[in-house]
Amino acid sequence: MELIGILLLGLWILSVTVRSVLNDGRGHTPDVRSTAPWTAGNLPSAPYASPRV
Image (cartoon, rainbow, N blue to C red):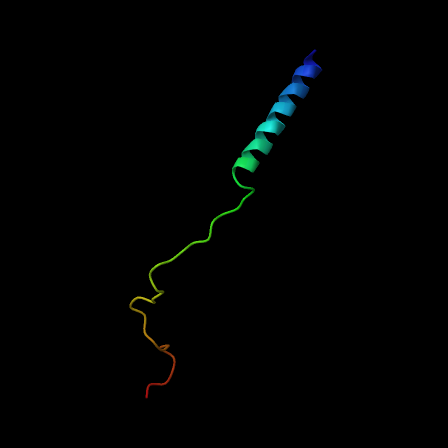
């Protein structure tokens, strides 16, 4: 009797896990869309180690 309970609990845990993975989209994440152009903020346009002209 206890063995049947353990098996039923295992099947329930397995079914809940499979259902949650399928509802989550199998790990699919949408692409990140950016509307603003990339900027470097206040960083210099040339490295400090380069010779100054």
